[in-house]
Length: 125
Image: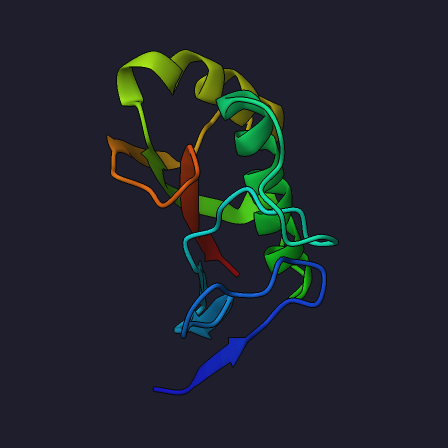
């Protein structure tokens, strides 16, 4: 199996030892992305809606680096710092980026490092 690991120039730089994306066996897998502004590297101001929107924009940049779009997403995994409080606002913003038929999705509550949301994608190429 060959794999193409890459970093997207329009996404925030990784905060650790990982790639933004990898293409293998006809799928693009993204890293877990958070709500950092790619220009400043700072976490965007606001609540979970603003952070979800920035996170999904960052993921769009990772997909665009390899010519993919959100319409090709088949699986979404989302982590929310406070699942019960933030799910409705997160889901409303999610619907700005995804339309029916929606990708499959797992949304869980997680202990996150100074952010309210982290999302990763699996994309069919």
